[in-house]
Image (cartoon, rainbow, N blue to C red):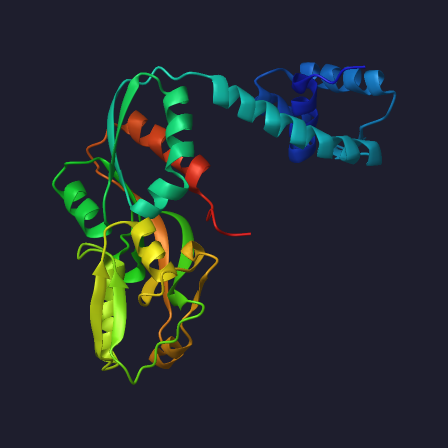
Length: 289
């Protein structure tokens, strides 16, 4: 016995809509064809899958059970078709991302995009938030994917996921607020650096910048060496890092949202393609459980 996806899709659509007529419209076939496909599926299984209550169609217990399998099969089938169907898009897309996205998720996105859209030339630039936003404004890139704090988010931004900014240090090193705090920061065009300095100044904390680095791995490595403290995404902490307890005195809670922002000049079809691929590859925090 074999279950074909066409019959399973007919069953799912009919149960979801509760109507042969509505299902036929959604499937672009006649109501009699819908009825025939359902009857043939019932004959193959030797089970009654639906029953009619006036004009409304309800699934039987066997129908509900098969529907669960149908949803899994159809989802997998449709994803496979989408994965291997090549688009006819042509053009050029310049995408700017921050270092954390480049390290954690960019390879999966680029692999998927280039396989799906071989006619599109994808160009990538890795930089810090303020530089990327400047490039987007001056049309040096078409798309940015980056983390921003709430005041910097625009109405048209596409939200991907959220994370919390936390103060971190090496597990075995203590830093007292009574001493001058060694601050490890990203370069000046990173909003995390600006937030860290703002918080320290607002709380009248004496500090000095012991290291300034544009690289995420560089910042994490220096924290691992026990050189200082930094403000970073919770999801980017390494095993030998922990939260800096003294930072609780700041009474600050800062969240960041990873967003996609695009130039309105990007052609609509390229715009839709990049949004679909970014949502598929980057819609979930890679560090969440």
